[in-house]
Length: 163
Image (cartoon, rainbow, N blue to C red; front, side):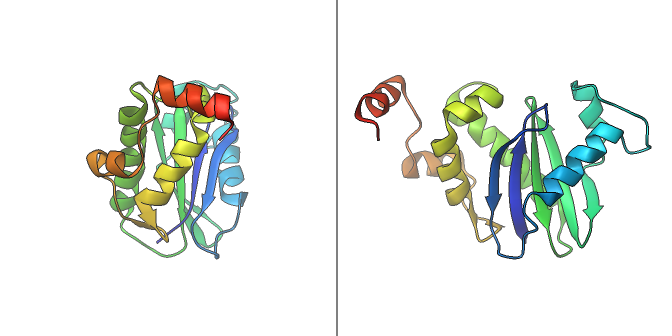
């Protein structure tokens, strides 16, 4: 199903890149998506980094032999790539669920800074939320029992111990 997951900032920086299957094309799909954002779908130049730019990009794009599905949420762009035809609403729902889980975990709308601060927790959540590209555990209560949400005390302990 899903071959790769990406989380991009509004500036086009790839914050998180996770390849779930060996047949992924690497970062080429994210680069293709970003070039579409920069040039606009109809060819007009849009170098603006506002939310309106990304809302004009269709949620499903065809790149080479794979599909790119995108969701814009909370000043971040969530992308997934598919090699085979699959129900697009399932992938869109998974990406929205991913963003909602992050917001619930960290208690505020997610942004670039929050992703960088909580990289390891987000990566563990990605590991638990899918199994070889198939959505698995997406319920926040079940995830919180598997991976404890970060607290101020755990961040201080992690900084002091270096683990």
